[in-house]
Length: 594
Image (cartoon, rainbow, N blue to C red; front, top):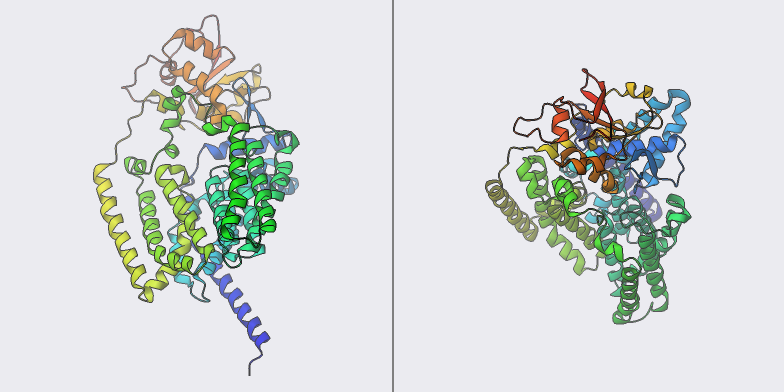
């Protein structure tokens, strides 16, 4: 007769060993995909976010305050105040400080910027595999082939972990997976993990706030209707949210910012909402623990509704969203041109086949998982239903706004092993759902391909103004010039901001907090009215533009077109003209400017 305790220990050891094997396989596939991404020296998601994050980290290392998120190298003419979390900066700063004595400042920064992503990727792989196993619910159901297939189908998520990608989306993905893993545990420990991840996710960025809401509502609804095991989970989630929210705010933004309203960042409105939600829900789990579902619902819904009204009254500006500072003109000239603000149909217009294919695969797996999730829901397995709700919501968000494209693949592919296994077991419902979804995706995708064909890009002067047309230009000649403010195209301005001599600053970058500078940039460079140009240039001392062979059909009636083609302009005195990289710098003679 086999000893039960010994047998249980052996089973746990086998499970741990099996999980480690699967995680190593997942990490191997992920590394291969990230290597493929950086083979050409430029990763898929490279964008201006990485440049600004680098500048923010450098500013902190140069003596900036932990709570001071101003970046003196950007003045519009007001100094730029970043909405980005110090939580993302922290590992890069720590790694740089630890290695700087041995490598020097720049090499230490480069090391930090390239080594932290693989660490996060390893954590992401572990959490993803563990959550897959929790969803599958049977030992050994998640096999290596499932992991290989699932990770191969989520390149748009994995490429966020490419070395050098220092934007916050990889941290968001890691926290998202931690939240889903916590929910899948369906225990008090899991509830603490989920609450911890939800709070930090909001602290890092508001993009996934709807997902945080889904997680909290899923656990809360399970408690309201008395689902088995939901009490400890709800108490753990709500208590951790109530305690960790003010603690995270104190550590990351400081006591002063905790009372300030910033609708686009972790600040007073979100602190009040999360802390109050946690306190109200935690109290309800104690005072009406044994009450009927209708009483439980009232105990959280009534004070929750009053809280929502109070928040709307206390923070009315946030009812207009995080971009209320962007007027109609700037929407047309800038934000409406940014792909992440458009629907998934723009992938067809831009000819981005890989994104279309990935969305199609997500739709097929999500549809195939629906019968399994329905069966689990009927059995009271709310954790599976909550994870599925998050996955589907992120998929739908992506269809409406492409900024979410990096998130749904990681969540939807959690269900690939169980869909694959159920089809292998001849589960008719799963097979039919998968086949029907495949047919709809193929027919619908081809139909959209015919209805929304790829279009050749025909840029105008505004597009050139915001293009990444010149990077890495030599700014050494600026060291001998008097300090001053430089107005440059937004991409050029961000590129040179971190390399300017002390006392120099740029006036515009392509971020919503930089709206005052963006407005002046467009007025100066593309307006055809002299008075508008002069007013826009008033706070600045210099103008910088790169020579660039812009297409001939763009007229020469704007300041940008004229300077980009190497021309002169009344009131601008050329002081730098680099034949090597095309960088041009002009001193502004405000009295002569036309």
